[in-house]
Image (cartoon, rainbow, N blue to C red; front, side, top):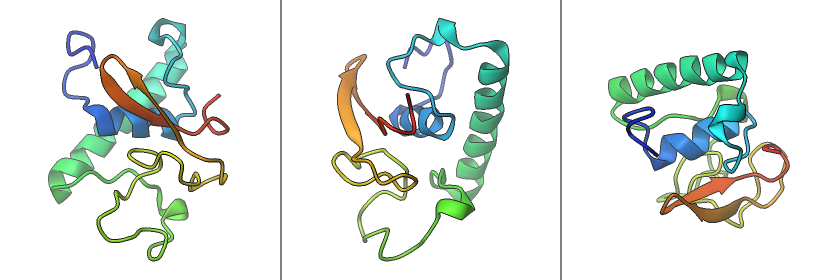
Length: 113
């Protein structure tokens, strides 16, 4: 969330991007190798372009987008963001949450280890 490092990445994109790349939210960024960073960066750029074009955050890959009833009205259409205690959309493990840098972060302990 340090805007001096990468500006514009909000809390939703933080949790969702880390999920999409299997990165645990408490893993120090300096431990990412170049290929991991490059893949996450390219994905983030694409996700933000889609979000700008559609006027909403879209992070769920088509193969994981099962539509209703998996997505209840008023619930975020996300993998982990604001889904603490609910099953992971990929593996079924309960999504966890904690405070990181003063903001809630959400992750799947199985998919992001």
